[in-house]
Image (tube, rainbow, N blue to C red; front, top):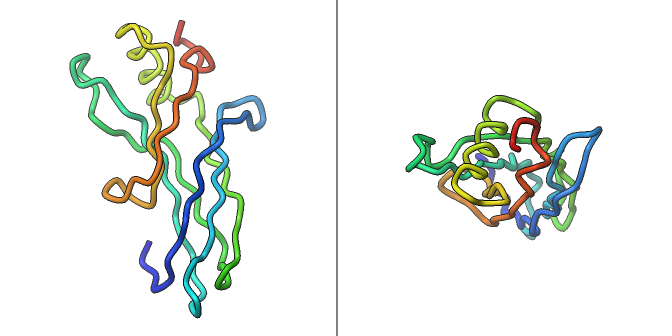
Length: 125
């Protein structure tokens, strides 16, 4: 994000939110003096050999204003959208059992990678 604060993103934890896959990410403002907000983003890792883009934005969530040292749990919901179902279907076609999501503050600032079972997305079987 466009902020003078700095943020730590803890490793994403796969979960289920209201019946859909999601990732829980704890975000901490690590700056000593500045308040700030951050946008946490999840990108599905495509399979280019199957015609998929390398990365596709699947979810994002903005934090509230965090004080220095403050943290917030951010929940990145992975809806049963065409993008996530397509990623899951391609993963299965390629022989993978999981869809890989990259989590960071932008596509140029990826902090973590996490795998989610492909069969949690409708149409992935």
